[in-house]
Image (cartoon, rainbow, N blue to C red; front, side, top):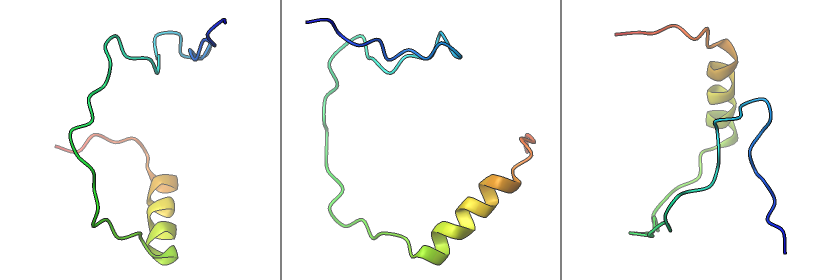
Length: 55
């Protein structure tokens, strides 16, 4: 079998493979999903993001 290369040609140094196996250390069991309104607010914030660095 040939493994698929997940590297994107646009960003050649960005790879989704890890050099070592990942260890699962826990599981979130009490996570509450955001409401559609909250999700929409996040999307609006991301769309308005101008990439400014704030210290």
